[in-house]
Each structure stands twice: as structure tokens, then as C-alpha cells.
Length: 247
Image (cartoon, rainbow, N blue to C red; front, side, top):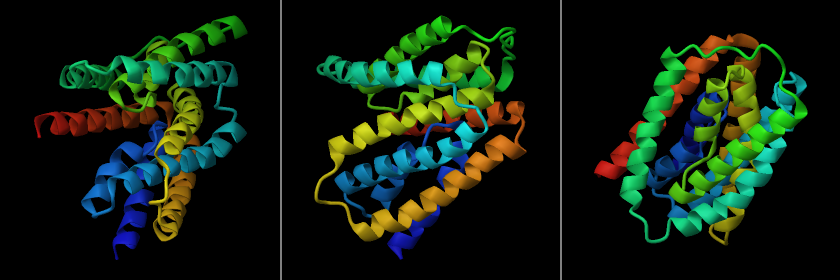
């Protein structure tokens, strides 16, 4: 019964969070723990599902030409390079203070997504501009993600939208970056604790949720609706992190 509940929960959250482009691992890990799954297995499984779901969703996003590779590839490189540095810097720092500041940022970013109307970019940025954006945003997101132990996608999306990028393009591009960040995290946690039954059933739920979420994002929702969905997801992430701080 536990495995089926895990699969259904995975499907529901993956559907919603694929629309926002951040992956569902941050929700799935505590859910799996609540179902009595070992923490190492929970983390490894959730991160693997993140990489899997974002890979499936990215196929649809790429077909719709929503992933900006000129922006995404520098993000992947610099986020991956600076994430370990952030993890090292975090040693000895007041983690509660850092998480508190990040919660404040998420609330601010969510408010911007819900209420602020950024000025759309009038002209398509040049290759050099996109590369510089990717280097700067990817580096900061990777460092902060490593520093706090959270997904850098939570930082990337509101920054891109704030810069005037279309919410759908921002979500799709971030999804592509999340594939590599999640798989790197999975390799760091994988061991002999993963059960094929849990991984298999939740993978089915994750793939189905990614397909549905990507379809909703590309074909059914308008950019404004995607922007609101991202804002709500950021508020949910902030709420979860705040509960962890106060517990």
C-alpha cells in the first residue's frame, strides 16, 4: 500500500511542479519520510525522479522551442561548478539564519511573480548577452543551492521572469537545468538502499505527471497563468522551509 501511495503522490506533485519547472524532489522527500521510507532511499529516489520527470518534460518543451540553450548551457556548467563551493562555505555558518534569509527571498520572489508585471524584453538578446545571463544566474543559483542545500531552480525562475523573460520560456529553460543538478545530487546519494519496486512505481507516476504537466504548461495555460502557478509554488516552498525552521 505504501508504494502505491508514494506513486500517486509522485504523480500529483510532479504534475503541478512540472508547470513551474522546479521538480518535485523537495516535496517528495518529506512525503517519503512520512511513509516510513529510509532517508537515504527517499533522497536518492526523489532526486532520480526529479531528473527523470524534467527529462521527459524537456522533450515537450524542446519540441515547442521553449528551452533557450544559449541561456541554459552556461547555467548548467556554472551551477554545477559553484554548487560544491557553496556546500563548502556553508560549513560552520548559521544554517538557520541562511535558510531564514532564503525564505524571505522566496516570499519576495513569489510576490513579484503574483503581483509585479515586468516589462517584456523587446528585442531578443544576443548570444553574448544570454551567455552572460547564464553564467551569472547559474553561478549564483548553484552557489546558493549548495550553500542552503536547496534546488537552484527556485532562484533561477523568478530572476529570469524579473528580467523580462516569458514565464513559459523561463520555466522550460529552468527545467532543463534541473535535470543535471538533480542527477548530480542523485549520484551523491545513491547506494544500495534503493528498492526497485519503489523506484519503478514512482517512476511511472513521475513520467505520467511530467507528461501531463508539460502538456498543461505548453498547450493549455497562458503565460500569466504559468506565472501565477510559479508564484504559488514558491510560496509553498517558503512555507515548507519555514515549518522546518520552526519545528
